Length: 331
Image 1 (tube, helix red, strand yellow):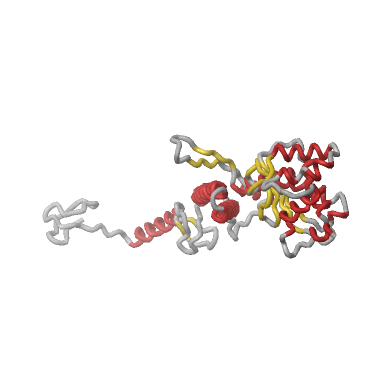
Image 2 (cartoon, helix red, strand yellow):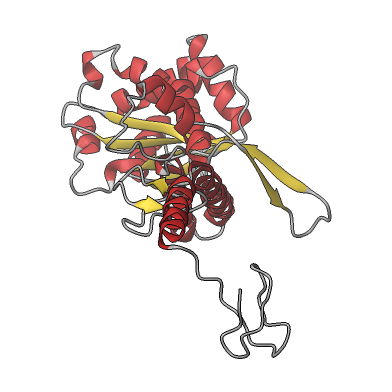
């Protein structure tokens, strides 16, 4: 190759003139340039991928499609979903445990905190684990496999501020804990009450709710009288509670509360409640009917046992202007 400046002869592949130092450009033949362009296009075709959602050309290492903004990296999608689900589950447990503690001090805050924890627990199961199937290659997923993936249980460690290197470890979500607690209240307390109310027509229309205190304190039982009709007399209400005590006479509780429409009226210690059930099972009606009001606080002071029993029922539910049951029993 000759230098256009000094006309000196240089090597064919020389990049500069050896005499004057002028930079030399190797101009390839037109045919050779076209071949190189084709090779570059083929190489670029091998280095690109197709978006499974919109069909656009993307990089093989792309996380999102630059055309439709969908996540195309399945492994990245799974890792992101796992991180998000772990954070939501951790937050739900913190709110749930805080709510259980707050119930003992200020009930509205505890209820709101527990509700927020359960909502986050539901959101945890709603976050998809697997990336969505593309419209072009839509695979049918069996419902059972989908449920197993979504209901996957994971361990959650919550540190204790007062104790170093100590953590509470939970498996699953607060929703599972709430379902277990509800099942315990239903089968251990509410079902015996339902069986009692079905025994006699005298209990028809009466509604009673029996559950642990705040549904989570197993040592305290709340017997909540919710609805009465005009057909029930104090003896009917009294008998229903005695049957309840009879069914649970072998259980050990710290306290039993008698409530009316959610308002606690009387409390009896667990030992006296068990004694009441045993005496009623022995058909000791004197103890069950007349000594019964004196087991509660405040003590009813009246002239006769019958009046003490009726006064007890007045204080339990007879002060409600919508309830005339006690008056019916006195006629």
